[in-house]
Image: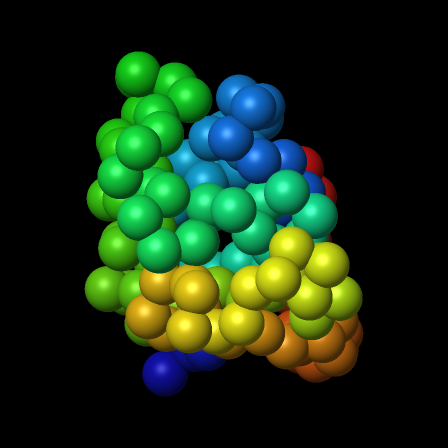
Length: 122
């Protein structure tokens, strides 16, 4: 059996920038096309996975809701990770984030890259 191709999507944009919705949409498109997707959130993008935040924002009405896109990541066994210093500066711990989101260092990205993952950054 052939291993799935890997994709890491690094998102740095938050609620105030439509590019963040594009990033989530591309990540979900990758999942829907059979890629093993990992999402790494930095800077204001972390706000997307703060408990309750995804229910209140929809940057692009043509995309599914943010809650649906985040849930699709988890439903397909893919991961969402958060930059530790970025979480700390915002006062977030894993308890503040959607269940399943992990606060891990950039080594998470590096390991995927060593496994051959492509990386997209928004």
